[in-house]
Image 1 (cartoon, helix red, strand yellow):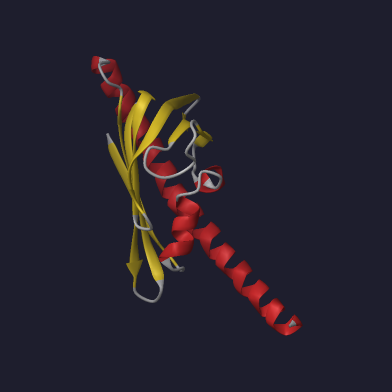
Image 2: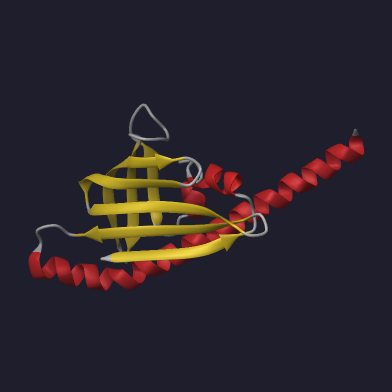
Length: 161
């Protein structure tokens, strides 16, 4: 199954990338993700690995994933190493007015499980799609809030100094 979600964030691409690519922020905006831990020496970039779990109904599914593409500050992609078969991608593109178009794509499946796996994928599809939509909206809110905080701090520093 495949799912994706898109939004436009009122911030330049660099601050959006700083959050999307940092494993410390994932649980702050990724809906349905209950675990996202660095599983190796490299916290980000090509070859970084994460243990991740994603809640689908009452089940938590996931496994070990590895970053297989890294094009800073525009795109990064992962694929599963162990656990549920999945491929995901964050895409950032500059938009007019200093904004950033953000897209997340996820393809997943239950390999070798026949009809039962097909049914499970179809039943999970609305939940997965909902989590992705919520994730991009939460990312938008988080980045825009951080931008407001930074501007307010700069104004306070300008008045004080």
